[in-house]
Image (cartoon, rainbow, N blue to C red; front, side, top):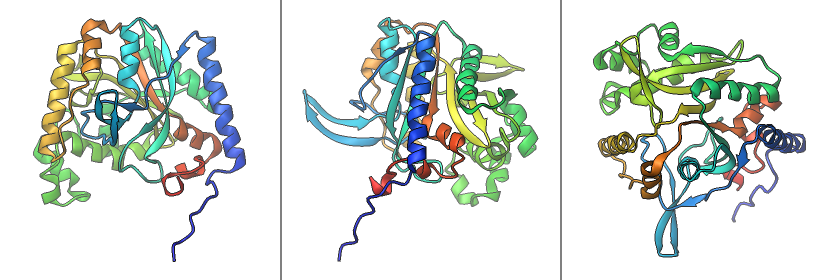
Length: 322
């Protein structure tokens, strides 16, 4: 006998009401600042090369297109709009990441992404603080360097430790054989997840800045005490990561090299290579304006607002009930 599906939502009516209020707040925030709301495709021709993001493929056959991907972020099409002269823009998007389900993750979730032309990462962090702290009614964030945060929580310098010593340190969580297949960044991510993140933003919100250059993704680089670091930031409140932002890389050749390096890492990890998004690369060639951008998880922001312990408390229907 087939078990009857659970049709009721997991979020209460009060929480659904708070979600609606949050969306109204976000739109009012950007309307006051003259930032244009845009929409871009949820279904695209390309996925992303990022080793840590697994997209969900779609069997599309239309308009000469064979296959496609549900988008993990609206970043690439939004940057195409920026290159076309859109000016400052934002989007409330539904995005998809395969294999992600847990207390803080659902394969489909809501993302707020925005780009500010002519603004660097410091200026964008101030605006993120305005939006988040204005909604939550909390203290404004401190700023802590990634290197400092790891030293204080894990007791070693992430810029100086050898790969061998880093793997030995991670043996407290994984077997030696498992660690052999992990990159330096994978090991640093383990340290961040198990030792650093749970300590962040417990007394007041905190921005982590100055990530290693190997974790730059689409951010510009600069030097800090002899080490290349990324103009990237993440915001944490009560150990919960809320957003990831960059002072955006605009050099198309460097971006191509990073995508190719991503695919090399995917090969080594046994993952399929991802074709480069040719339309995005053409937009970079045409010229992306100097800008900063950030992606913020709206479901997580709502969790903080209503005091939820699990993401399913703020979703009408998580994947199990979709």
